Amino acid sequence: MPVRVLVVDDSNFFQHRLKDIINEHPDLKVIGIASNGREAVEKAEQLKPDIITMDFEMPVMDGVTAIKLIMASRKVPILMFSSLTYEGAKVTLDALAAGALDFIPKDFAEVSRSSASLKKKLHERLITLAGVSGRVSPVAEPKPSSIASPANFRSPVPVAPVPARAPMSASQDDSAKSPGSDSYRLKKQPKLLVIGASTGGPVALAEVLITLPANFPLPIVLVQHMPENFTKAFAERLNKQCNIRVREAVDGDQLQPGLALLAPGGKQLMLDKRNGGSVRVLPDDERVTYKPSLDITFGSAANMYADKVLGIVLTGMGSDGCNGARLLKEAGSALWSQDEASCVIYGMPMAVARAGLTDKVLSLKDIGPRLVREVM
Image 1 (spheres, helix red, strand yellow):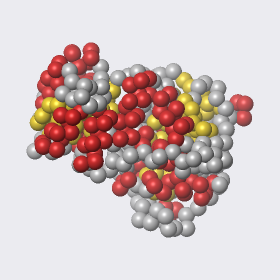
Image 2: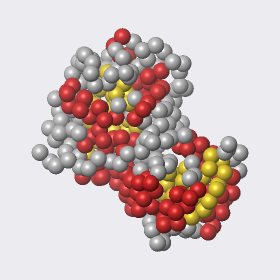
Image 3: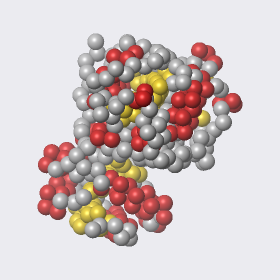
């Protein structure tokens, strides 16, 4: 039975082009079209779609308000169509916080010519996200305040295929079964925390970082799969929500305790030993699938800090981070991953867990408190 899709957009042109593109896939079927947010809420209730594509700017009721009302009635996967601008990024982040699972650029040229790239991306995203149910939660409210140099690091790191499941080591001590009640402790005090995520990551990262106090003792590097323009808005949003400081990284930024540097979209972030520890922001490389790539940041962290890194892999499609995690583990560093039950998409964390690289598997709600317990 095909995945049933509700298309929400105020443009008659986009409605029909999206319907044609979606219906080209044998496993997808558009069952309804809504022209504004209010109509989307009504049709979501009437038609019970498996997934909804949602525009953000519409008459009568905007997309973010519609998402809130839809999610209050029935948790259905929602894919946003987003403008690739700074303002578009802010609206998209509001939509993700309201319960949308993911977003895709609203590119008029791509839709007009019905590009093969757009078709593939849209079909895959709809089919994958349609399988997600009951894993949507709003961002928590803000709490009150209270590698060696790039020349020596061989990049890019190729994306690893998901390996066959390996037995968990003794060091993992049933962490998937009892994440909060065990005797696991970090063997060495880390000097750097690196967290990576993809689909579902904006909400997951916010939930983890909001729990950290302003005096958190480690520098933090964040890698979230996002396009250009989005990461600046995301860093600003996190900075308002969190007690720690968060900003989009720029080339030469110094690593500082209690400061989280977010890798810029469309670029790569590596670590540099000079000046006591700084970041290098490098231009896009067409050979690398993800921009930014967690593999590259993990690999450079292993080169620079060896066994003094704590890496965390959160929700996301694909296996980015698996090869870099292997380098971290070979250097003696620790790696945690999010458990399947709390992930929007159990792809990236599954890759490191199946490769036997995870020291600790934790529910999303336990990661922040566990960080405070282990490193404060």
